[in-house]
Length: 120
Image (cartoon, rainbow, N blue to C red; front, side, top):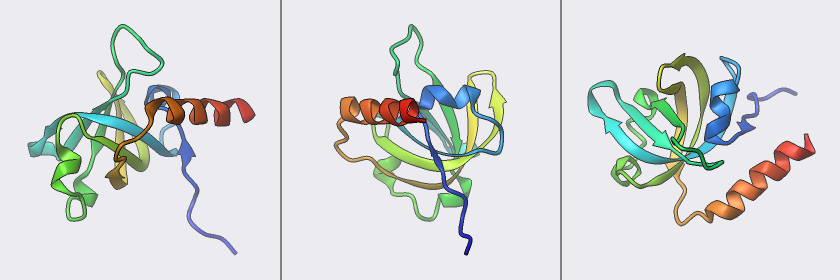
């Protein structure tokens, strides 16, 4: 019995080294929503760097299901999608689903992802 391909849980900062076509799941904070291209610019400055990594997330395929508060600057959201191509300021991910992270405990999330990466 086969089903859909599982997503890889990654940190937003890991996207730049993730192979094109990989299905990923990650958390990011909305920094900007570009209406004309239906693109969310997400940030998550972990591990802490001088400049936060940016992920450009194409949400054109999920626009009918996304809620307005998930587009607001400062909102933390979960994304599942496919890495499509690298851009000058980050990477492009084609979203297949997006949902609010609510009041996420960032420290616990970061520790959990790091532990999962360490476990292989």
